[in-house]
Length: 227
Image (tube, rainbow, N blue to C red; front, side, top):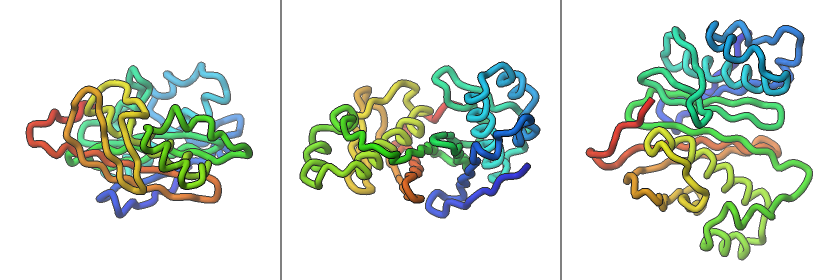
C-alpha cells in the first residue's frame, strides 16, 4: 500500500502525508508491510485501537521521509516523551485524531517541524480556554466572541509548537509559553532558550484543522537540535 504525499511549499520541500485509519480496519493491516521489522516487533502486542493509530502514524511518517530523500533503512521507534526517533539529517512529526493519522517530514537544514490535527466535534469545549490561553490571548478571544473554532485553532498551533520545539529544548513546553496572534507565534520560554523564529500554517478541511509549525534558531550560538 502507498499513501499520497502533499508538497508543503511554505516549508521548503516539506511533505505532509495523511493515512485514514479506516484503511487499516482489516484483519491484516495495510501499511504493516511498510514498517521496519523492529517497528513491527515494537508494535505487535498493542491493543487493536492503539495499534491502528501507531501503524498509520508510522506508515505516514515513513512515506513522508522517503519522499524527502531518506533511504528508509532504520526503524522509527519512540523517544522517551513519545515522539518519533528520526533519522539523522531529517525533521518530522506525527499526529492522529478522529480517524486520521498525519505526518510531516523535511530535510532538517537547521529547522524542525511539528504537526497537529484537531476536530471541532459535536460539542463546544471552550472550557479549556483558561488552561490553553495566556491572559492577553484570553482577553482577545473574549472580545472576539469566544469562538470555539478559533480556540481550537490556537490549541492546535500550540501543540505543533511544542513538537517543533522539543528537539531544541528537550523539555515540556506549557501552553503559556507560546502566544498566538493571528498567524504570528511569539515565545515566552521559561527556560530562556532561543531565540527562535517560527512559521505556522493552519488549514481547515471541513471541521478538521491541520497545523504545521517550523522552528529555526536565530542565534549562531544556539544549540543544534538533537535527534
